[in-house]
Amino acid sequence: DTAVSQTPKYLVTQMGNDKSIKCEQNLGHDTMYWYKQDSKKFLKIMFSYNNKELIINETVPNRFSPKSPDKAHLNLHINSLELGDSAVYFCASTESAETYYGYTFGSGTRLTVV
Amino acid sequence: AQSVSQHNHHVILSEAASLELGCNYSYGGTVNLFWYVQYPGQHLQLLLKYFSGDPLVKGIKGFEAEFIKSKFSFNLRKPSVQWSDTAEYFCAVNARGNAGKSTFGDGTTLTVKP
Image 1 (cartoon, rainbow over the protein chains, first blue to last red):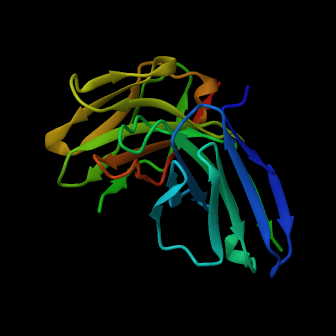
Image 2 (cartoon, rainbow over the protein chains, first blue to last red):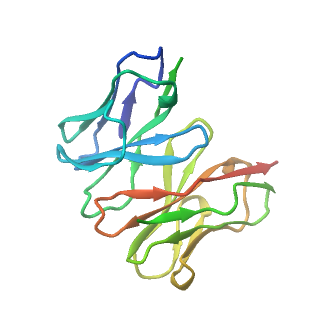
């Protein structure tokens, strides 16, 4: 059973489009995150939700909007996609933001904007 | 804000050679420290972590890391590498009480020649 699953695995889209990436975890964790990994493999945190509440909101263009319908799901919606949005987006979860023991990552979504 | 520096960007070793990857962090308070591994085409996996206690921590697959507080370092070691250790290695730091927000280093690419 996959612990943290992301869909889709690959996403190729044109500039200006709107797209969503979905993430689900079956670990019973309270806290979920979105990270962006650029072409140089640098990882940067974008957002975090703890039990459906937004707790981390880094300096990210407001074209990016996270949504957490319940604590097992964290989706990322991106409006008006730009070339610079091309990256691998990783979802991650941890038991709790208060008792943080490290992340369990999803397999990533490779977004290519053309 | 915390920062993480990994000095070796690309390390090339032969099988059975010993490995040491450097990681230094910058933060004045108490931190949790992690090493993650990303095998080619895969997601990040937690190798090992340090929270408190014995500064020498052992992780999976024969890896270990030593926390030296006076040097703000958390170097990763393995006595004898295998071809299957070829991967990207990331050091990460989390300031205690910071909602599980981790700052990652730039990563070190390890290539092990058979």
